[in-house]
Structures are given as C-alpha cells and as structure tokens.
Amino acid sequence: MVAAQKVRALSELASYDMEQEESLKHIPLGGDKPPLHVYDAKTPMGKCTLFKTLMTNNCKMDCRYCINAKCAKRTAIYKYTPHELANTFMHIYKKRIVQGIFLTSSIEDPVSSMENILESAHILRIQKRYLGYMHLKILPGSTYDQIKRAMQFANRVSINLETVSPSHLDEIASNKDFKNDILKRQAWIRSLQSRFKHSQGRSPGSVSHTSQLMVGVNGESDQDIFSLTASEYDHMNLSRMYYSAFKPVPGTPLEAQQAAPLWRQNRLYQLDWLYRIYKYSRDEVQNAFSDEGFLGNRDPKVAIARTTFKRPLEINGAEERDLLRVPGIGPKTAKSLAQTKEKLTSLAALRKHGVVLGRALSFVKINGLHQTTLASFN
Ligand code: SF4
Image (cartoon, rainbow, N blue to C red; front, side, top):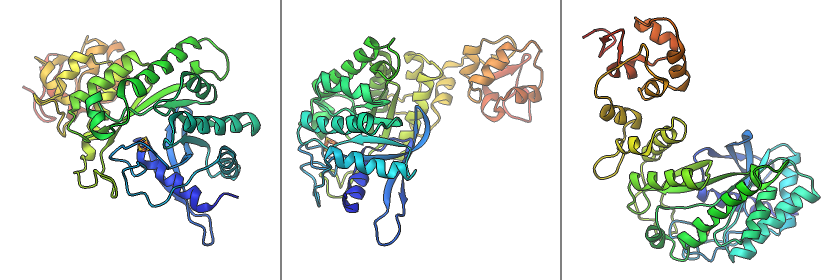
C-alpha cells in the first residue's frame, strides 16, 4: 500500500509545469486521509480528469524557478517504483476518480528516470491492459529508443522548452542544454511521427506533441516567444504550445522575482490562435508587437487590423480570408458571409451571420457605407 502522503505530495509537486488547459482540484478521500490532487484537462480525447504525478521529486537539475530543483529548499523526497505507480493509478482509475494519466518526473539521471516512466507505462498498457488516455513527459536527455517506446504507449508526449534560447535557458537552468537536450529530442519526436505516419493502431505516428514556455521569467519579449512558437509549429510538428506566466515559488532562487501578469499569457494564447487556427502569416503577426517586441494588454487581432486595414472592407463580395481578419468575425461567420448570395445592406443582416458588430464596425463597409458606431453612418 502506497502512503497517501506520497501520492498527494508527488501529485501536488507535478503542478510546477501546469498547462493553461489544466486546473488543479482536490478530491476528499474521507476520514483523516489527505485529499487527492487531480487535474481537469483538455486532451486530444476531450475533457478529462487526470492523475498527474511525478515519479519522484528528487531532481539533480538546477532550474532556478522550480521547487523540485537541487538548489531549492525541498522539504522531503518521495519516489514511486513503477509497480507502485501503476497500482496507485489503477486503484483510483477503477474508482472512476480519474479518466487518464499524465506521467512526469524530476531527473535523478535522465536515462534511468525516463526508464522509470517507461516501465510504469509498460505495466499499465501491457500487464494492466489500461487503454485510456496517457500523456508521458519526455525528459531532457532521454535516448532515441526511449522516446520511440514512449510514443508506442502514449497518446501525447511533451518536452518543455521553458524559455526562448540557449542563453536564456542557461540563465535559469544551467545544466540543461537547449539544443541538445531539448531541440534534438523534439526533432526525434517529429521524425518518429513521420516515420510511423501510416501505421495502424497505437503508434508514434498518431501521438500528439506539445511543449511549454514560461512567460516573463527572464526578460524575453513576446516577439521572442512568438518566433520560437511559430518555428515549432512550422518545423517540429507541434500540436500545441502552452504558455505559463511566471509565478515565483517560495523556497526557490527566483522567489523574490516579480510574477508575470496573467494577461500576458492570455494575449499570447490569442496570438497563437491567429497563427495556428486563422493561418495569419508571420509577417501579419509582426504588426501586433510594439517596437520593443511586446503585445501589451490589448487584443492582438484588433492591433493587427488597425495596422493592416488601410480602408474599411466592403462586406459584400469580400473573400473569406479577408473577412476572417476583421475583429468580430470568426471562421464560421467569415465562411457564411463569403458564401451568401444575398446582398447585405443592414446591421441586422450582419448580426444574423454572426458578426460581433461592436468589434467589427470600424473595419467594414456595408453596401458602400461605413459605420463607425452602432448609431451613425458616415
Ligand atoms: S528538470 Fe528542472 S523543472 Fe524539471 S523537475 Fe527538475 S528542476 Fe524542476
């Protein structure tokens, strides 16, 4: 029987790399037992509650923001064996407290710590016949063969970039090598995805690949963050980048550093959406940044439209691509407006197609007329 204290601690300590689409919740277990920490998350299989845990919090790395680092004031060290981990997860999975697992670890040694993750995954998939959602963290420094095995078990794998360049990483985690430990491993993930693209069933070809960047940890600009993200989407076959506003953690060397505002993280998500889903070009996105390379707390779609719309766009006859660039017009509305055969002459007609008038009006003309407010035509 695994001590409840260990289960709780290793799950709580896994929150150091929280993705924006996860939220921590506490499940009371009754009596004097400590509550169980689980995470509500959006996954490629839909929303589910995850048992997210470290295999151990005994890290030999020196990431200055992390409470599990060798240089932090850690209170206690815990560790699962692979069998303990698999049994613990299956116990709470069978009780229907969680629907999936996100398995990560601090690094005692990159290869042996990754091996513990893999052995746990193997026990779950092969011995326990667990078929549900599994997200495995790829530890920096893992071998090619380990990554391949992880991708044979997982639905999703991730390796955190943390920050935007080798020199930025060196400032906050001097014993991680940005190019070799992280980018090289990401390239292996991409090549395994493409090598097994046509395989049937569970295979590396069907695994999604994500990463994470901290925001405001060491002077990087939003433009630095976006450049790296765009290159990850374009060249590493990344499904999602997650952004996490820096929060100082008591007991770490960065405990006195100022937190980054949450809105900065949220504006980066909006920009990411424009690039990833709306297919804005890299050049268009540059219009969202100030001369210093920051977004500021304003909607990047509006900021871009203010620079790129030289004159209001006539709604009638406009292309779907141009309509999508108008604030207040999303993909469904852009398609619907571009495909309509009727001549649009009124605000009511735009509203019917789903246009958010308050956001769109200063950027469009309706049947030759430009209206800057809901009340007046120019
Ligand atoms: S590798 Fe760095 S971020 Fe990960 S657990 Fe260790 S100290 Fe924390």
